Length: 147
Image (cartoon, rainbow, N blue to C red; front, side, top):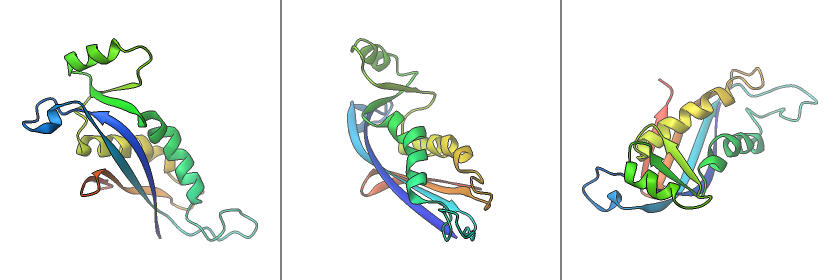
């Protein structure tokens, strides 16, 4: 069985080598879709009886490990020296330094990696993260999937 939970957050970034508008500082309303696979829990008295995982728990774990970390932050490639210096000059600015350029593809892969161990077999029902889709805009997204 597959279940999917969608969460949204706002973040800024720039793609330093891009030839168009994305080379400038800007932001997006990102949407994150987390798809989990697992067996349906069949245990009388268990609060998750009849579920793969409680959607509220899917949300809580995603908030803790990705969304709250990236929400209202500037996601910046550590090698983008001018922007790193600029953001460091802003007192108490929420900056997340990344080891990759913050494209939708790299962010989706990074979020998948961050959440993969978090959801692994939480209930003993063979639970696993199978797909993570990150929308940069309503019409553009990147998807990381289990091989």
